[in-house]
Length: 387
Image 1 (spheres, rainbow, N blue to C red):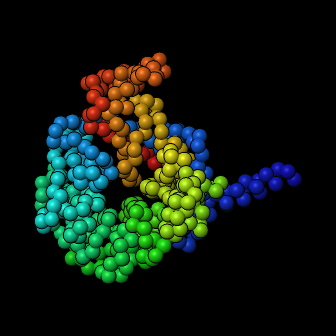
Image 2 (tube, one colour):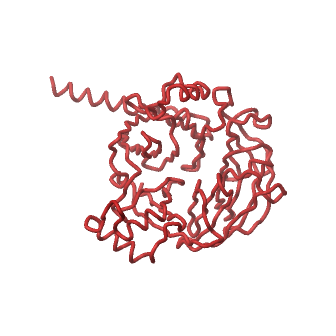
Image 3 (spheres, rainbow, N blue to C red):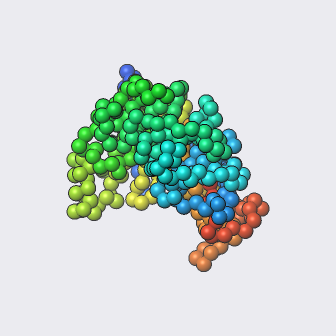
């Protein structure tokens, strides 16, 4: 009798952890964040790591890094917040070019919000929210043309002759006051979704789209939800167990802002998911837990979800995972400060001696790179996914 009780208990537990509907492929993924999560290198999803030292000179001094796109032969590094520049390197880290066209003329961007690479015509595209346009460049940063847009957007992707764009909760008549739209190269509107309402009036709320299996997905980070734009259905909903998720009565942005001002308890809750990506075998979702970056890895075959820490990774170079700034079906990409890589390359600092514990990793760094300066450009880490 006890045996059958245990079997029933585990069947019930699996049902609670992942609840799916076969009608529209909707799933609720339960994430159990932990302050002592295992390192991401133990998740079994990273097949290899490529560490790239970016060239440093007066022409390519990088400020902040908000997004990195890695293609077969180029790195595109965008700084939306500080310099509003896009830097282009090859995959060895050699500097190729810089796009710095901030201004008010037709072929300049007023407020750089996003970049995407169009594989169909091999072009780099920059989204300007001010003046509402896309500036198109060849893969090495040579200007081609400007395409005016019918509304202002904060994020945009391109797939099969259509643009998919996010308005960033700025209500606009052309978008029918919806937050996500689909339109063609002639600015003909094909669809709009997710009405903008007062509870989402805080424009700092983050959104993101990603591509998987020839579909575009919209991530409502604030509401922990992922939607398939092509059919409008809810694809995934994340729930953080153990009271970690932001309480539902604080879903309204203004209520949450008031709560922060009076209680100062934001660290007790996971307020949103950050980046989300689906692959053939997994769903990946990053978030902040008590100030630490973690990644939920949901196995679609077993319906098991585990949380991993995006901290120290000792398998390849004994370096931090880095700040995650890019993710697709093939890779995750981050950047690591030159100061941190320099410390491991020399094997010690004033607080720690790493030479006995990580001799192979230190020797590898010393063989790969000449001496590193602390104020050099960051290093880029490309983690190839084996999923």
